Length: 182
Ligand SMILES: [Zn+2]
Ligand SMILES: [Zn+2]
Image (tube, rainbow, N blue to C red; front, side):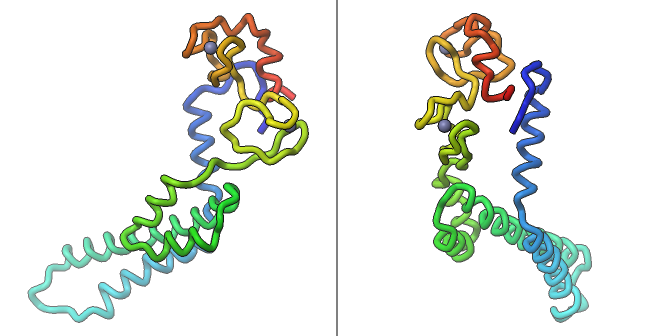
């Protein structure tokens, strides 16, 4: 991703874009299946299930909506995991089985606790690296802005390091933000 170094991107814009990117990996088949699942639950509750005279309509609407939403969310979650597992280089067959078969979404919780960091490629030498690292292990290319004194990660908009108080302007911003400007 290429950002310019005019410090224009605000924190909220960055996180909104990250959420959009996360949601955009949900495959189309799981969106379609989720809608089908929701409609099927409505059909089950309002057509297939026997209607008793003493039964309240609002209760049935509520139950149908709740179960329909739960099933649709679960299908979307499975779709998300099926894509997410690949960009983290994890065993997709194994994790899909765990997420689908463990009851009540426990498999998904286990997945989110144990998943590996997203892999990306070094812009300089194309080595596959976790997105959490600050420098490429093969060519020392700077992948994220870091403090010039303690080398901990800093935000692109920070003026002082939040860990050691170092004045980041002294690091010569163009060098610090090399990964973002070329
Ligand atoms: Zn590299
Ligand atoms: Zn520092």
